[in-house]
Amino acid sequence: MTSERDSPEAGRPLEPSQELAALRAEVRRQAASPRSGSGATLFVTMALFLVTSEERRLLEDGVVLVVVILYHELGHFCAMRLFGYQNTQIFFIPFIGAVTTGEASRPNPWKEALVLVAGPLPGLVASAFLSAVGARATTMGEQLVALLFGLNALNLLPILPLDGGRLVKLAVADQPLLSKIFSSLSTVALLALGAAGGVVPLLFALVAIVAIWREEKHRSIARALRTQRSWSTDFLDAPESEVLLLRSSLPERTRSVEVEAADLRALHELVTAPRAGQAFSAAIVAGYLALAVVVAASVGSLRRVEIPGAFVTAPQSSCATTSDCEAECANTGGAACLAVAQRYDQASPSPDYAKALRASTRACSEMFGAGCVSEGILTYYGRGGATASPKQAADLFEKACRLGDAIGCALLGRALLHGEGRKQNVRRSLAYLSATCRGGYLSTCGAAGDAAARAGDPSTAAQFYEQGCADGIPKDCQNLATHLLDGNGVGRDEARAVDLFRSACDQEVGFACANLADLVANRDGGTEQARVLRTRACEYGDTESCR
Image (cartoon, rainbow, N blue to C red; front, side):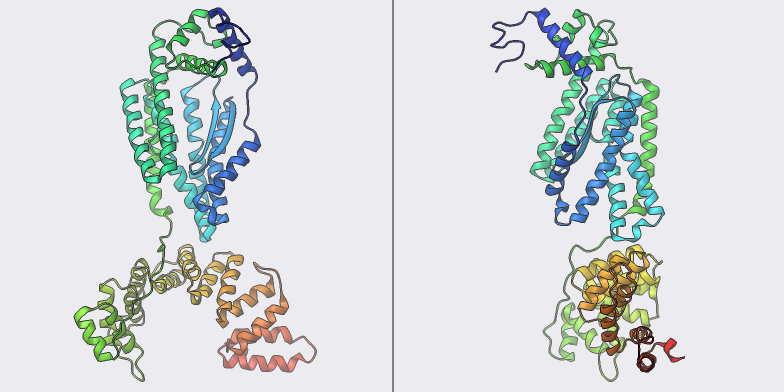
C-alpha cells in the first residue's frame, strides 16, 4: 500500500520538510473546506435504521421512534452549529440509534458540556410538557411520551459513549487515575450490555470500546505534552518543532496524509484546550446529580401502563357433575374450583353465590386469573356474603390481568374509565381495553372505543366500534353509525349510518331507534315511521323517546 508521501509518482520518499509542508497544506485545506453532512446521508441511514428496527412490523411505532431519536440528535446539532462547530452531521446507525458529529474549532469544556446536554434535556422537557397537557390519553401519545422520557433518560447514564458518560468524562479528564477508572467501568458496562443484546450490539460495543481507549490514549499524550513546552494556539502557525513533537507522540502512524493531518490537528487541540478546572468539575457533578434526581423522581409518574405480553385461556376441568367438581376442587383445587364457581353462579333458578364466592376465592388464591375475575364480580355486587366494594373488585381484576386474563384487564379498564374502585384514568383505561380488543376479545372493543372517544381520539374510537360492530355487537354498530353520520373521525357516510341504526334498532338498542327516527322524520311520509320508531325506542329503554 502506498501513500501520498511515498508514491510511485514521487519516485522516492518525501523529505521530512516536504512531509511537513504536505501536512500543513492538508490541514489548511480541511480548515478552509469544512464538510457538512448531506441530507441524503441522513435520510438513507434513517431508512436503513427503520428497516432494521425491532419496531419495523408496526410502521407507526417505527416512525415515532425515529422522530424521538432525531429530535434528540437535532438538539446536539443545533448546539454545535451555535458554537461554531465544523463538519456537523447526523446519521443513523442500524440496530443502535443515531449520532451527531462535529469538530470544535476551539475546544472549550463548558461548550462541550452544553452540547452534550442539548440532546437529552429538550427530550425530557418535551416529555414532561406533553404529559402535563394530557397527550398520554391516546395510545400514540403514551408511546411518544414514554420514548421521549426513556431514551433521553437512558442517554444520561454515566456510561461512555452516552451523553451522561461523556459529561462525567469531561469532569475527570484532567485527573488521569479517575479518567482511566471511568473508562474501565464503561468498558465493563458496554461488554455486559452488548453481550445481553446479541451479536450486532456486541460488535458496536467493541467498536465503542476501541474508540474510548483511543481517546484515553490521546488525552494521556496531551497531558504529557502540555508540560514539555509552550504551545501555539493555532496549529497552522505552529513551528516545525511543535509539529514534529506531535507527530512523534501519536500512538499510531497513519499512511494517509488526510487522516494524519486530522489526527495532528485534533491532538494539538487537546494539548491547547483550556483545562476544565475544579469549578467546572464540581458544576458538572452537581448538575448531573440534580438532573439524575429529577429523572429518578419522574420514573414513577411517567412509567408506561403494564399490559400482559399475551393473554391466557382459562383452564377447563373435565368434571361432569357439580358434586364431582366439588370433590376435585377440595382435593386439587385449580380448574375444578373454577368449574364449581361457574356452576353455582349460573345455577337456575336460584344461584348459590356464597358457594360460588368460596370456590372463586380458592381458584384466585391459586393464581387462576379467571377465579379472580369471578371473585371480583361477586365482590363488586356484594353477592355471596361479600361486602360490596368496587375498590376490592378492581384489585382482583388487576390481579387477574397480571396473571394474563383478558377479561380481568378489560374489567380493570372499565373501572379506570368510570372511576369505580380506581381513580379515573382514561389513558390507562384505553391501554388496557385496546390491548384486549386487539388481542381478539372483540366484546371489549366497544369499551375501548368509549375510552378513545373520552380521550379525544374519535378516529381510534371509530376503529374500535367498527371491530365490535363486525363481531355483531349492536351497541357498537349504533356508536359507529353516530360517527359516520357526523363524520367524526371517519368520512361522513349517511347511507351506511342509516343501515347501522336500523340494524341496531332491530336488535333492541333504543338509542339507535331514536336516531333513526330523527333521520326519517323530515322525509316524505316519514312522520308516521318516526312515531313508530320512537315508540320502539321507548320500549327498548330510551327514556327521552317516552316523552
